[in-house]
Length: 374
Image (tube, rainbow, N blue to C red):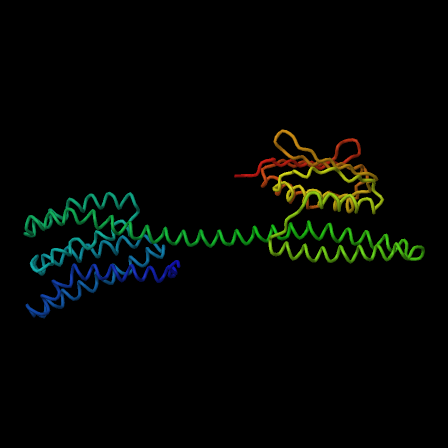
């Protein structure tokens, strides 16, 4: 079970809270000593004011930068924190932990400043902080601690904010991928629905026209056509349900048989092609969609008198070619389904071509690899 990732504001609040605890570890021991042991009102007020100003400014600057609300004025806030932290040790003494205040601004250097300025400022602070601590009388071990603490604090602040922004960008990228997946699925569904219903409704309309033509002369033919219309309508309903579920598997042999039958019923000469029973399973779906869309376009967009279908295998590919003589008498364009076919065949690693042949014919050709993708 994967843990639920909190909202960015919640993560930012947790980071600010943990940083506040870190600051408390630096400053509260010395403040506690002033309040409990020394009990000098002036010193206590000065210590409380300094710690409160530093904590409030630190938390605000960190929150603003976590939320990407950076501003040039933030460097003045960093300067104010540094001024207070460097003023407290000489005013209250370096004993009892006030020397730790010199390290507090380091965590914000790479947060409030641009990267190039942050590198320069960190290098300068790494030199000046231990020198200043030595001038205040800090012991050598504490001076060494100041010298190593400044770059470590700056790097820690930078990494904390960087990781937070990376998590935010990953969250946004995941949301964008989800939106893209939804969009791709909508396009796929629209394309499949066009391919399925375009062919089926055209076939139903054709059968209805045939039935109307024989309604007064041949009751048997009319009953036959009505039966075919019922069958086609049920098949269309089933196909739409399968498209919605995303499980529709098209058979090339079935599609070519249906295509030739529909075209012959429309008065277009079309022989049912021979399809090898040993064709690879993965070629049936993409080539079956080509046959379905080609039949729809012949019925809807041309006045062809014949259509020739060829299926062959060679050179490591399975080829399907459909040619009709309706290019010179086309009523309109080839329909939007050809673009969807090109996408399908390309996705299957094949080639697709469609267009007039120059002699009054229109040719649709597709080839897919005989070997499926690994």
